[in-house]
Every structure is written in structure tokens, then in C-alpha cells.
Image (tube, rainbow, N blue to C red; front, side, top):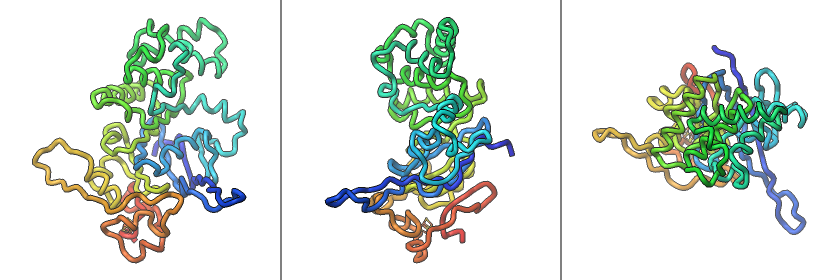
Length: 322
Ligand code: SF4
């Protein structure tokens, strides 16, 4: 197996809920509840689930923008959870993030040049000439022109702004990019262009991606492997082909049945789930999916299923495989 660049083990994040007259802690939200996964060098892992499932919280913990409650995050041989603030600041050169809303993440009062120079300054590139040259290079790398450097974010389209967001992430030659819903705010036609750009950059620079999305359709073509989360837990994780062609978990089956497929003769039937996703503040015992699962059994309401290998390289947390 190619070496893992990132290895996450038993990662948890809970947020306290305060209430009552004296603001005491009256409960907790388990936003991420004991998940483990790895990403090999040069591969893309898609992380999918409905909003509130913990996928973005996971992405933020990898950069320690949120502190994990428990668990370890090994990146390139070092446990990030043990690093001091200063060591972690330096480590952020290696792990960069691309956000969903490029407009909100780009300072509207700064030119593109200033925006792209910022990470270079933070990571110690002191020579102004070197920075200017790198900015021009970055713009061309993401398919923009060097004269765009003098413009402001509002002078670009949504797709171009996301290219600027990607250029900013690339500025300091990272190894891992966490892309949090990078195409969700874009028109479908533009989504494909940005996905293609990300794939080209991966080949050119040997990048490793964690690609977070709420839609299994979006991550299909970009991901080597895909993990599916529900209520803070990992439900299934497998290589893309195996997950899309032969899903093992009833939740993945339901999500896949909702992805439109272009074949008009397809007999695919949509699995309509009953009820809503329960509140993470009031997560059910047992399997988190049991109240909505079409295949639920008695045991599912009380015993949390183990996340285990059910076929070679294909993991699922479901009592159907006990
Ligand atoms: Fe459904 Fe039970 Fe499997 Fe959960 S453990 S997905 S409730 S069958």
C-alpha cells in the first residue's frame, strides 16, 4: 500500500450545551463521534453526508481550526494534536483549505495580488520580487491571467473567484488540500471546470485531497475512495467503484438512489427515507440511522454497530454484516 499521508484515529468533537438559570452544562452535541480513516499520498478521499453530519467539523479539526475532543491526527508522521500553536502554524504551510464560498473567504478590499501574497508573507517569503513572480505564476496555474492581479474579488465571476481561492491554497506548495464543498455554490456548468482544474493540479503537483461534499454525485469522478458520514459517525468507506456499484450500508443506498442518473431506461428506484435527521444534540442510541432505516432490526436500536471491513478495503458500520 502507498504510504498514508494522513491517518485519523478515533477522532471526536463534542460541543457543550449550556442552559438553565446558571448557564450550567446540560448536555453535549457529538458533532464527530469516533471516526477513523486515512488518505494515501496523491489520492483523493471524498467525505460525504447531509448538512450537520460532521464532515466540515472533521475538515476543520485536521487544521486544528477546531480542537479535537479526543483522538489522533497523524500527518506525515507527526501527531498534529500534540503540536504547539506555533508548530501548528508552521504546519499549515503543508495543509491548506479551499472554502465553499470564495466570495466570503476573499477580502473584498484587497486586490488579488495582495490576497495571494498574504500566505507567502505569513510563511516567510520576504523578497517582494519573488512574491510578485509567484503571484503571476499562481494565476496562470489556475487558468487566469497575470493582469488579473490588480483586480478586486467583486470583478470576477463565481468560478473565477474559486480559482483565486485555489491559487491562494496552492501558494505555499502544500501537500494536502482540504476542499470544503468547493463547487457547491457554483453553477453546474462551472462545477465541472473547477473539478477538472483540481484534478489537473493534483496530477501536476502530486497533491492529496480531502474533498468534502453533501452530494455523492459531485465526488464520484474526483474521488479514489469515498467515506459516508451520518450524525457524526462514519457509515461506510470504500473505493469509489465499489461504493457506487455495490454499496453495503442502507444509508449509502438511500443517498445513491437520490443521485440522478442520465440513463432514461434506468430502473433505479428512489428510496425515500422516513423522518428527518435527528438532532445531534439528541442522537439516538444504537445505530444513529435506526429510526429511518428500511432494513432496521431490533438490535439496531440499542447497540452501536462496529465500523469494520466487510469486503477487502470496504468498511461499513451496520448490523447486517455481523
Ligand atoms: Fe439499518 Fe441496523 Fe444497519 Fe443501522 S445497523 S443501517 S439500522 S440495518
